[in-house]
Length: 221
Ligand code: C5P
Image (cartoon, rainbow, N blue to C red; front, side, top):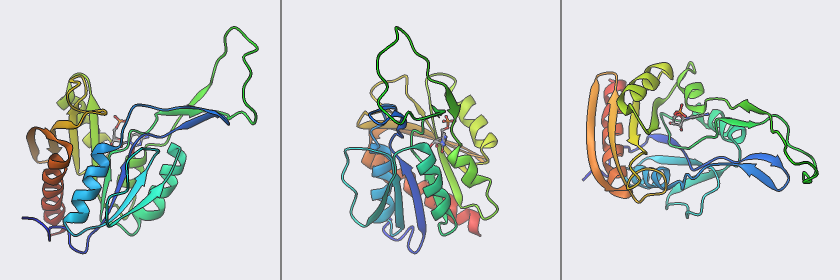
């Protein structure tokens, strides 16, 4: 029973997709449901943490005892993360942030006047890397959703983004990952790795929060 694992710890989680506006009525987005991030927020609150959930648009109710900060675009999520990061000790990046956004958002609805059209895109900021590279960085956890060479990419991201932990998840398997109710992961830290077998996202979240709490407390001592 781990109800006191994160007592007094302020933890921030990003969750869900982002939407990148093309014009006032259209956007680019992805299929993230937000389920994993919301399950982590709920499990962290149960473990005693003060939880800020920076959420892109989802259909999920805000878990009890969680403060939700609603955002739409990656730029909004980046600003919200930088605003809370000075006060939090643990940061978990679970959001499926759009990698690119349209260079310009049209003021008016774009009309279908042409047979083809182009939308120029520009890279979005890497939110978790920005948090992890900050001078007063919190204990920072990322996710890696991959369809091949999972552990290779996860180890690479751990190092490149300067993370304390990365949760690797094989999205080629449709029974886990995006929109599924189950997940199975390998947790990678600089010191080693550990697999967690397939189970419901809520149950997995409890196990992940226990592991994050353990690693966080070790990093403090
Ligand atoms: O590089 P990639 O998108 O695969 O990395 C995934 C991890 O980085 C996730 O933890 C995700 O939330 C985070 N991320 C982010 N900002 C981005 C892109 C990814 O925080 N712009």
